[in-house]
Length: 172
Image (cartoon, rainbow, N blue to C red; front, side, top):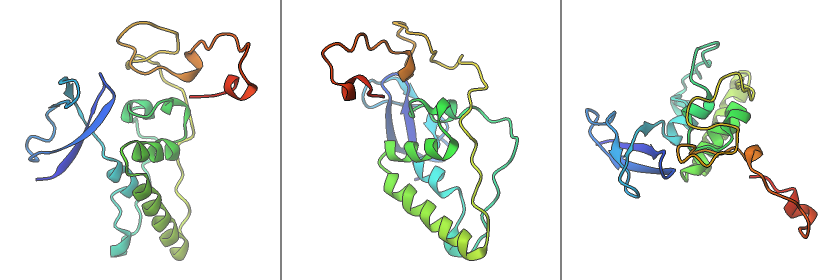
């Protein structure tokens, strides 16, 4: 049975579960809070890009101008993903589930193969914010329990009196 990853929006937990392929698209109970969690794209799938560089396959070009969901919807476990370039979101997603080294190694190997073959570096989508935020979070300060993701720029940090400049200038 394959191992799949699921992400609980309620408690922000990403977990793995063995499941038959037939059952893989069904939501699974979160081991932390018990709420139903949808399956997500695994960090390994993100990092590998479904290209087998060891078998000598040519990397497939990224589809251009596809009407895909915004990065922040594809990777809900990555905070501020609406404001990050595509590569950074994918790298952060891999690190957030403990597969960062695997992602870094895989992308380094792919870059080496591209260089050996004289292929160009992949182009990644730049940070963009050309979509609305009707997907579970907003840019306004909210106490609404449905606002699972808060962007750092929406937080009120209050006056900096008594704090060092470094603490006052921190970011999330």
